[in-house]
Length: 462
Image (cartoon, rainbow, N blue to C red; front, side):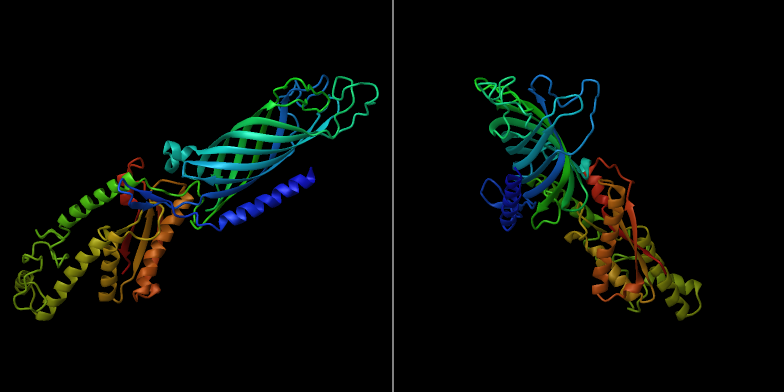
């Protein structure tokens, strides 16, 4: 039996090593015209190693049993060890190939017995979180449902010393022992496997399964056999172990973020509408929409032209309306220039500190979206024009997932923006990263509202 288990382990290692060399990443999703509309990325191969306890529940010969009638739980010990590989044909459905070694022994009060079993299973697997569409709500938790067929080699190992000359047929009550007589059993297996992801590619997995054999002639103790009738054996098994997801995607295949193409179409449409709304915004309240405003920081109340530029006919850098006001209230040209610069600086700083300058991120991503880099560009211009200023780069995340993970995610988003500014020539000493973690100011059940808090804002420190 040990040789068989060793062979099983070696076979799985070779099998998973060869399979992992394939590209598990690309899974083209096509539209009605057979054109690719999305590349869904997820790791399809997963291996798992488990240990636990298995127990045959029926049948047993008279005087043999493995559970006590006066105890709910007997002494727990590992008597089952398993190795399996899983391939997901889609994010929701897959196939599992597994092998398990079981050892059954008597407990206190039962006649002594020891039997061993090496079983192999082929099962379909369902990722229930994806099937129900609740993967975001579950976070690091998941639940797999599996079921399929089992083939087992069952062998009694403990010799009770019965004299084989006393009886005619092996395995009959009082007859010779079935020691080392191997039986091939067939059955069906169903179970559930809760998971908890502990790193990007590794998870803890539990399993609770029940197996019913439709071909079994030995009792679980091995001291009785009915060769003319199937005994309809039944057993239960529970285990705990680890899974590892193979592939080029950085996240475990059971948790990979895969958007539905239709959802993506709606998201693109929503983005276009949002872009139109953004274009029609008038941040400086000068009556010129931002998409036409070439001077999007004009001073409130100062006259502007059709492109949002403050009117400066004499081209001295001071808007005419502000210049006339300052000439009335200030004595020298120097004080006029200084007052204008101060007013403009205060206005820009207020826009930044009030969160109007922002860059956004997709769900669970640390790279800014392509359409939201204007906020970084604005800060780059500000820092170049104000060489003595320094800023806080403040990262935020929505409430999906655990709080410690979201603090880390918000920090990575802020670090990503800092890295862009440093590469653009801003000294790192002028940039301070701050993680605010989860932003709870919006409804966590609203996908649209959560987009607004997956962001980085800025604050001028000087």
